[in-house]
Image (cartoon, rainbow, N blue to C red; front, side):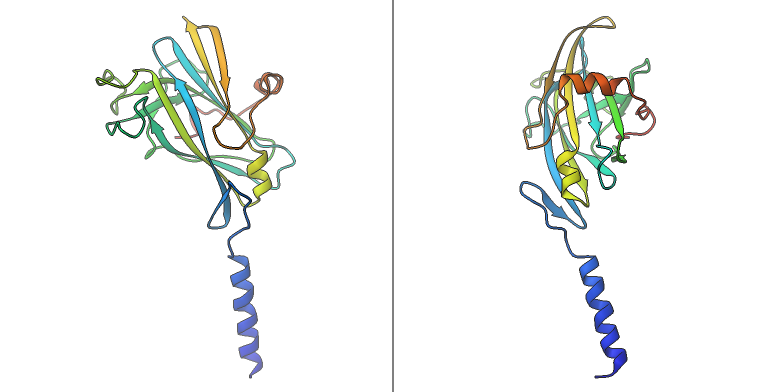
Length: 210
């Protein structure tokens, strides 16, 4: 065999190795060059005296960025409801927030040491978020499915996601409850959530999940 042929085979084999799917421990699933983990947050509430806070954190020791992608928003009727379904998202600035759907949301990417928070203020039943809820589903109840992905499965396992439902009296929080994703993953302990809340974070009113 000619030397050129040997070199071509060697380069081709190296390329196949580079693009090989990663080995992802269950329940993570390989998608392209990433390991992914699907989590469901819910039930959540937004509007009518409630709001939901989504928090995301990547450890400073992570080997690279971690991505959260919104894959589903469901009403209290689950998959049996097929009408318009959206939520409003923003940081903690005043205002109603920006309506988003699964189709319009963009992935939220955090580098090692990154922390982000998103406030969900309202459940939307039309694109303007002004229509009343249809007959059947609870007007301010929803669940959200997120896909966590990174090339390194350890980074996916260590990524922290939490949902906190808050009940409001005007602008004052009167009661709150944190919920754990229904799939393996990590959740903020109360002391960690409080500490992280004091750290600088991305302004999600202009970036995350939009």
